[in-house]
Length: 80
Image (cartoon, rainbow, N blue to C red; front, side):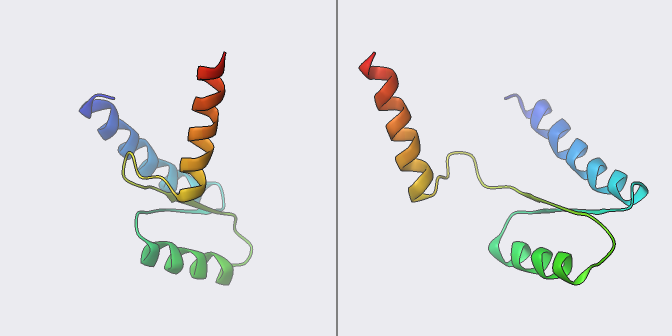
C-alpha cells in the first residue's frame, strides 16, 4: 500500500466517524487497549445511538490465534 493510500484510508475513516453523527450514531477509531476500553465504556453507556469502534493494529501484528490460523491456511495452500 502506498503512503498516499494509507493517508486516504485514515482520512476516510475519520470522515466515517463524522458521517455517523449525521446518521444518528457515533464512530471512534482506537489504536491501544486503553483507547478500546474507553470506547467500549462510552459505547455501553450511550443509549439510542449505534456505535462503530474501528480498531487499528500495526501491520504484521498477529494474535496467537490469528497466527495459528494463518499458518494453517498457508499449510493447506502448500499441500496442494
